[in-house]
Length: 160
Length: 160
DNA sequence: ACCTTCGCGCAACATGGTTGCTTGTGCAAG
DNA sequence: CTTGCACAAGCAACCATGTTGCGCGAAGGT
Image 1 (cartoon, helix red, strand yellow):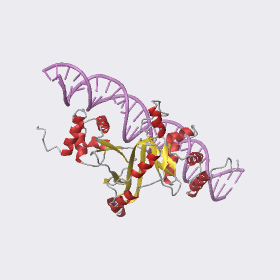
Image 2 (spheres, protein in one colour):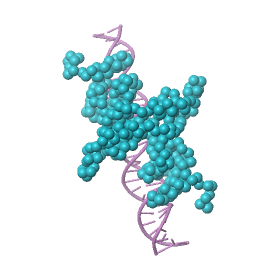
Image 3 (tube, each protein chain N blue to C red):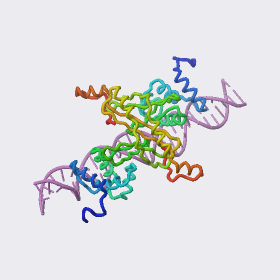
Image 4 (spheres, rainbow over the protein chains, first blue to last red):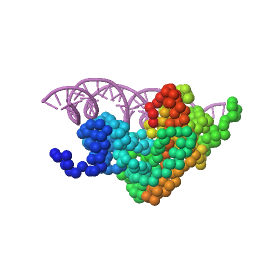
């Protein structure tokens, strides 16, 4: 197959370039993972990624690839407080937060970020290398409707 | 012993009252846990609490007590992204966030909260019952100094 | 085409937390 | 004070998520 088979998205191409530039090998699993996470935005659980690759690679490999990508700042770990690691592709320079539906776990992006004040407060307390994590939780419009009608939820994981 | 043996702190007394008011039993383990978490502020890991009670009770009991207290909103779970559940006593009406040192895990309180805008944004997207979690991470002044001198850290858990 | 090295697969392990079931205890009624 | 009952504690087995060690295979440079 020619390298341009089924038009590699520009985001994916950039990702692969970032990989090579960092002196990292462009292996099958890494490409497959990058293809998924550059195509859709929502953070992906490790297990979810693994399932989406329907056994093409070992679960351990998914963990290790993501760890490697995180090291290169190509991927960011999101923590929704349920003990599951989720990852999303990092578009350099973009910063955002998430709203997560406590019932169906739908994730949407909030482009506002309001943490500067808190970071400044921490800096004035003597802290350095400051970062922050923030998540907003709620019940999405769909789940509210569904709940009113007394119908079941789409998914029933333990609520967040 | 008289009920006022070694002056129960007002916070502890209030906590016990909250327990009874909710129709919950005032058992040994629950009292012991409440005594600790009302005396000091910092969020406590489950294991930390268990150790501080040097085996007075089963670890499972600590989990279950905290789960019960969380249900009653007497205790809040804090998530620092390392997969360890930490809990702090909830003083009704108080809302705050934390700055956590990535190296020694020292925790300090930030009384500012800046999430209103984000919560409003989420509300305008149709979400209900909105809550948020936010943590600020950094390297505390002590650890910066210690690191400069090339000395070891006080504690060496995997950095956050 | 070869060689080195990095990364994958597999299996075993570690950690943090949960569940099921039995025993014991808080607490209130008698 | 005694009794009874429901709820909570204890114990053990289990589960899920993530990690480590190691040999083999393939990526990519020469």
